[in-house]
Length: 86
Image (cartoon, rainbow, N blue to C red; front, top):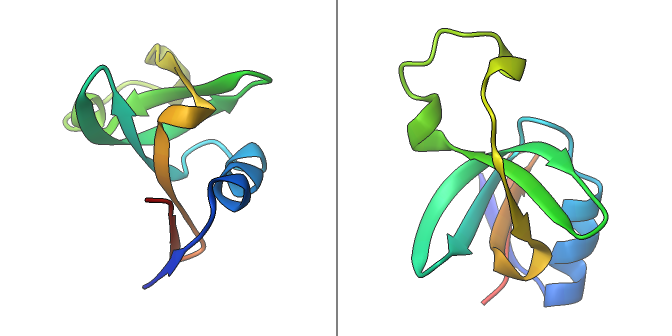
């Protein structure tokens, strides 16, 4: 896996094209955590923290994520490449 430093604009362009299930690192309310994309919207991304997924046995649509703004996303992993801002 490789890591690429990108600008905020480049990171957001990649996030806007994300598919459900791709991994993000989010900084939300002073906490940094990894999460999986549930849905990309016009103003942000609905995510499910990976800690909530551990031990889950329900169907993918059974979990309700929460919205984070695009500005709270620090990195995204797509196709084995991690794109990192900051």
